Length: 31
Image 1: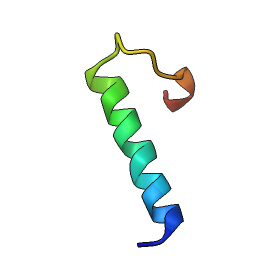
Image 2 (image 1 turned 90 degrees about the vertical axis):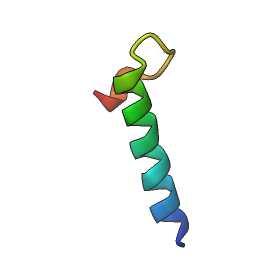
Image 3 (image 1 turned 45 degrees about the horizontal axis):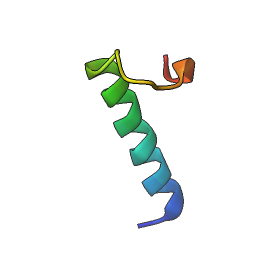
Image 4 (image 1 turned 60 degrees about the vertical axis):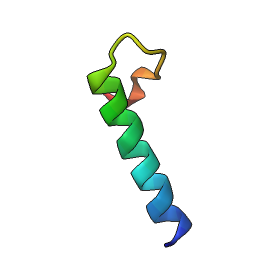
């Protein structure tokens, strides 16, 4: 697995976490 693919998956996971847990402290850049 390439590092870029891993980073993209981490970004997606963080975005999904922000959607399911809007109360968590996440950057609003994902929106």
